[in-house]
Image 1 (spheres, helix red, strand yellow):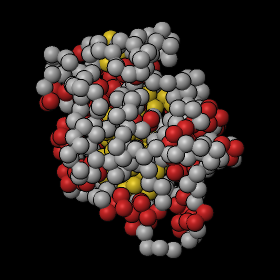
Image 2 (image 1 turned 180 degrees about the vertical axis):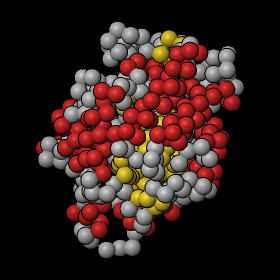
Image 3 (image 1 turned 60 degrees about the vertical axis):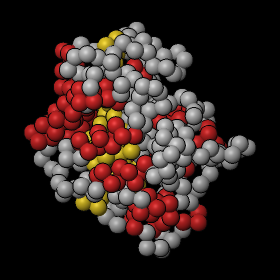
Length: 395
């Protein structure tokens, strides 16, 4: 077995320790029950992948009913969800992985069909430029924002009670936390928008409330992570310098930072003259004060070490663990030659991928899955956004 750096353990500042530096990225399963409760299909999916990574981040869970973003999404919006979430945490942790519950509000990425007639909400009443059928949201009132902050805290309390080891705030992929930060979707003139500092107000308030809940209720090491998208492709929109300043602001307020990119080698989408990898730029800002999770097209073990060499402290695998649930175990047993880098659609059931998830992997996510029966060359996401990043438009 090669001396890979990603096999080394990592300890967070609060004492939580990971057995290795591989993280299973949060991936939408669309397989929860209609009311957001955990299904048996989901438990099987996570159980098949629980043995290898040091940390597993779940598919995103909505913190209030109006925050649901798609059918079959996990919920952490009520105490009724705690028994199922307890099963989920236990399944993930059965072989020593740490379990992180990703939480969010979809904001204007939802629609009235998903919300059963309720109009989606956002920072401002501004329709997203894509997809073409996006609906105009209602701007949240100050009292609704206060309630939403409280609901992020309540969701965190439920995660603690269910036995998770942390929560990750999903501030990426154009969802509500990002919508408040973005000058594209947040054009408010009150304390919740306008200037850079005011657009930070909501994410910082959510972080503060979640940390307050952790301090009050967690009886064991419990971490808070934050995921962000480095750039937006709209104008106006978030630019790389905005996100680097965001990272600077929160690096002493969260336990780790998780980037959302289709390629770990990506350079700026908006400034073609800037050829410094985005990962390296965030690493310079974070300076190992907290762990930085690098991600994106990490196909082979040697690439995972490249991510670490590029400044990350942890490496997230997404599609790679869909194709190869035993990715880490095969490295540990000197069997990396057998790691799948392509997958047959016929094998998805054998790989414990839920049926609904299989459908959208073969449609919306076809270009990133490396299916063996796909004659088209796999796309390289070093210079364009990937489908999982929340954008439906390529540069």
